[in-house]
Amino acid sequence: MTPNASSAPERTRADIEATRAELGATVQALPARTNVKDRSRDRALGDRLGGIGSVARRHAVLVVVAATVVGLVVTTRRRGCRP
Image (spheres, rainbow, N blue to C red):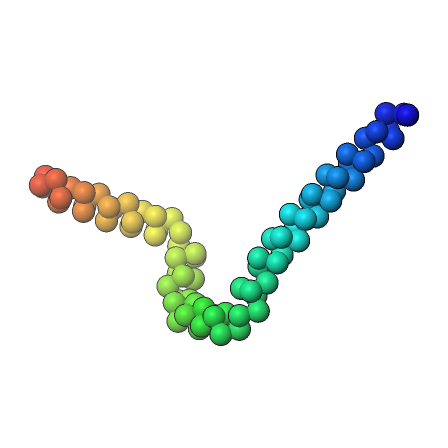
């Protein structure tokens, strides 16, 4: 038997396992994709909050700096230190 002939079944088994994993992930994702009620609710909620999210995406650095400042202020006040 040649080295190629012995590795062919192993490759086939690996392909089968990869296909099974993909199929399993697809089957798990199907209920979420077919649940129209939840998807509609999520989309409506996203539209309501979309203004906030789009501002945060456009000004990501500003949001990070603001969050850091708020975190520092809260931490400082909890420790009782006043700058």
